[in-house]
Length: 264
Image (cartoon, rainbow, N blue to C red; front, side, top):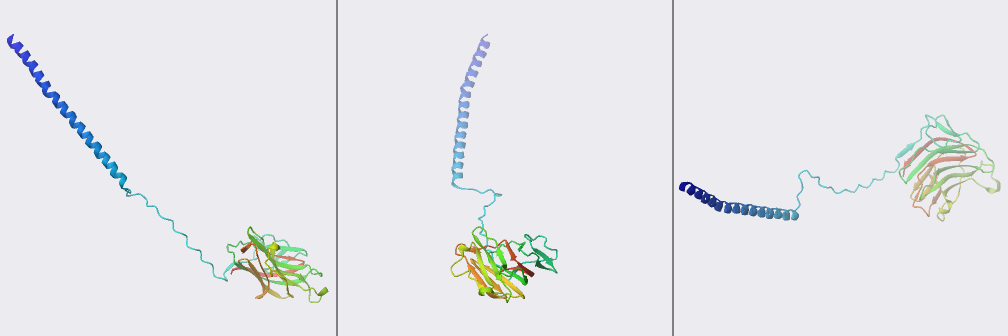
């Protein structure tokens, strides 16, 4: 019995002793974990602070490029043929062919009234020249109503024009001293600058002539075989219309052998 009680007491002492040694150990272990967490937190905060002070670029990140300005377009040299008429397949593709027909590779008016022909080409340049080689075959009016004209339809901010010959008469019939004349009309005519657009006495006769209209800026010139026979300047628009372009005639039979559009 004594030994049993002694063992029991010893058991109590051992348990008490174990507890007395175990509790400080758990406290010490908890303190170590707390210190570790505080240290990790301070390390993380330091890393974030360092991250805000510098910027790192991922290795595969695309570097933005600054857009380079487009190089200025180089003007085309003068005299380059941009368009040349081809009637080998008739008037297919042409617009406004009222009063015109293809004859031996060229064009001929077949109407006693008006004839309009629109060139199936749209210009992308503002300065240009149109060359049309034609012949007056027969006048269908004796009172000066016969005429022909190279034209450009007006466009927004661009005056149109009609450049050609009017009041056409033969070499004999000239009542009241009236003469055929060449002239450039702007559309609208009220935009015509002072001292421009004036008529010029002109006698085309029945031979072949190359009529050339030159458009540059706000100015239009009409030439026959290289000689100026009319001009007009606009006081309202900086540039003259570049299309649609065409040829019209009134009460006259014409032959046309070629039409070209060139750079100026």
